[in-house]
Length: 225
Image (cartoon, rainbow, N blue to C red):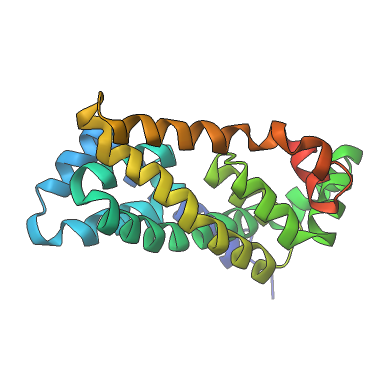
């Protein structure tokens, strides 16, 4: 009996990519803070659920920066509920980004990456200190989805990656959602406090660079940076 030319797994991947592409094309006009704000606000009482769903599936169809979503959450829901919704959606988004890249990459792409010495070295570092590396990357606020994609392409254990992400997601979300809740009051004390917190967070890689340089997890950050 002849084997099928295209495997079922490959066909499913093609359909999944096509579906994600169609969804991205349909929702592209909304893929900005103003569009997301209007879409969520128009949902009425279901707005929080719509926002959470957008956040969860953002890695595969929306391509919207996480900062934009946190600002939307702060603007629409305030600092408390906005943070709760961002954390819930972000927890789901983290898993989606990780498994999307791991599922789509397959053995062929991992074989290609294995032929690049710098990527092999990065993979070894991230896998050997997966929890520390992920926590470092999250705290230093590298693009959230990019970290998820990179972890999925590595041989890092999902549990190490996910636990580190969950630890970092709450404090980071609090800062940026709070900033979003103060955007409408750009001259207020709260606005400048939020800016200061963002500045401090962004300065962490430079302030602690010497301390973390010899830590296993920092090596992964240094290679990505």
